[in-house]
Length: 160
Image (cartoon, rainbow, N blue to C red; front, side, top):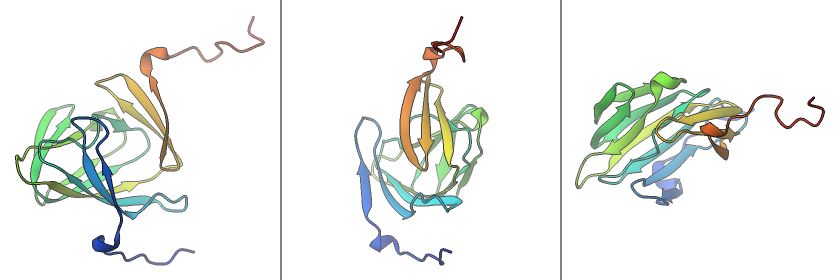
């Protein structure tokens, strides 16, 4: 059985993701993905004028964001919604919860606490680009273009 975990932000290693414009963030994982856990916890910081992730939604995971400081917008199927310190955002699984966060400040970072439910396997859809991704035990495994869909029995060796 796991014990209570208490960590201080200052003791956590930072992961800086800056692979592709306009996406950039820093992440401190307070409770990394572990098979026995039912939630994932991390602190994020998005630099001015950057976005965290491409517009997406999960099929098996609820994401909860608590805005610690800064301001930005959350892109949703209903349009952009402003974000500011103290806001709590809950994104349940499904298409209606598609989202992407952007820091709108010219000078200040947007910092938030991310607390998510976990699932052994999750499917993530990217509506703007027609992609689907698969996450197994917290690790992104494969991404596919949605237009490459094939029938269930396609290419089976015993197909008539």
